[in-house]
Length: 330
Image (cartoon, rainbow, N blue to C red; front, side, top):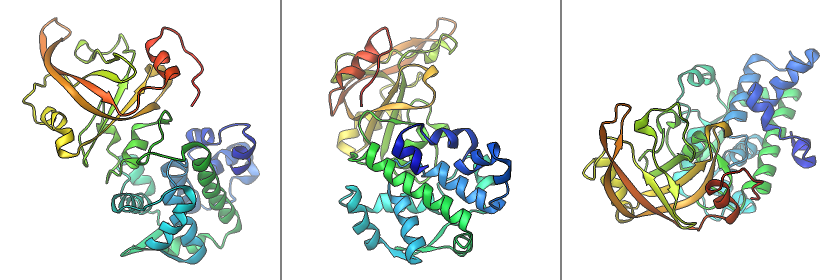
């Protein structure tokens, strides 16, 4: 994977998306390689590949690398190493988030919980990270040792090339899925399947907008979300909400209560599950209005004007506001 990263021939994460790990891809095209790893080793590698091998955050990768190298790594050791990756402070919420990912408690999808229930890469005692007995045993196998080290090296190199420096865990104008956002915003669980357009949770409110709505979705979800300028985004809540609805009140009082609101946008569903990240936003105006359902009946809904912390980058603004696709430079 590191070679692909270095020479840029193809993004090795495409192999992970297709086969869940680079090893499983190799095994599918090279029959002689199919039994190089045990099933337990394959599952451990698959878990690491899918949950933190993409290099969007270095914390899990550094903790795993140092635990393998030293058997035990303290939070202070992690913090010192993370400085090399531009992370000046290892805050409590991000440390706890990395722990939840590494010990598997972040995993929430029923199928993934079944698949990775037996995975044990590290164990925690207080603020110390230890290499698990299972991982220690697997590291004695040269094929697995090479594969996990390659994944770690790839992830850290990708972070430095693509995601550093980040801003509170996310890089402006890079692409993220809902699952990525849950992890990088330090949610305790992967609740991406219940986020839909947005969700107020764990002191954050990520907002995911599909700019061009499909004609196949119901009228009640044909929300009129759009840029009014590079600095202002007009956004609709879910239908059937009013200004007095609890979640609307949380958004109205976001600045007062420290609710961390982030905006993610994709052009259409044809782009897949990735959204461009536009940074923090704050509500500056709001009004109650209506949205018609499939039968033409009006439903209450709340329209917010959101001010972006950083005005939208020109090419991306033109991409979303214009009629044709362009090459976006990030």
